[in-house]
Amino acid sequence: MEARRLAILCSHLRPIGLSPDYSSSHRLRVSGLPCTSFSSDRENRLRDTQKEKLQDDCIFCKIVRGESPAFKLFEDDFCVCILDTNPLSHGHSLIIPKSHFPSLDATPPSVVAAMCSKVPFLSNAIKKATGCDSFNLLVNNGRAAGQVIFHTHIHIIPRKAYDCLWTSESLKRRPLDLDGEASQLVARVQEQLLPSEDICHDSKNPDFCPSKD
Image 1 (cartoon, one colour):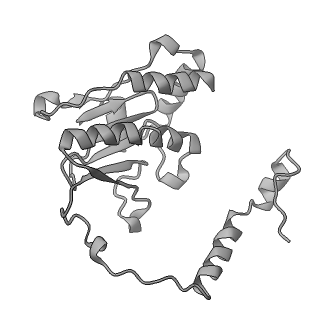
Image 2: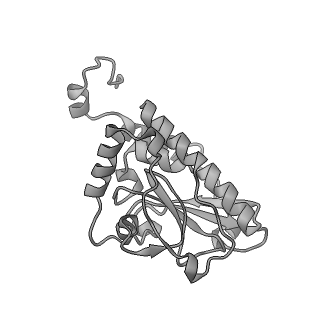
């Protein structure tokens, strides 16, 4: 755990700089930039495991392997940030884990944490580089939600006032039904949050399973 914290800290100290000129000469292939000062057998095993989880037919996995070009903004041992090739706004970028997971809900919390920990650092740089003062953080999870590439990724979308990017921002919202709909929804969600019987039996902690009374 300590080695991982040091690796994440090192990645903040050695970011890849943003360039205002995104010409073809700056189109870089993604490659690893390990923090050699804090390298360990554990980190090497993690990188080997990540390589094993890559998919041959996934464009993001090809970028991670260095087989497909990308406009790379940042990279560390756990994730990479690239420009979206079909941007919704100038500077629209993607944070991609180096391991292949098809959706956010299939991604381990530790990987999600590693990605999200870079959001303040990267979004501030992207906002300054694009002259924006706001951004949307977006995950399209599942086909119905607009996910096209089934490798977990987080969108950072720079915003400016009155850019009219989302039509949904002008839609009138319907108030929540506080009497029946809300309480029923809360009960259904909380029921799904309860650990299954199999998980309870497998857990060595006798206090792991909450009471269902």
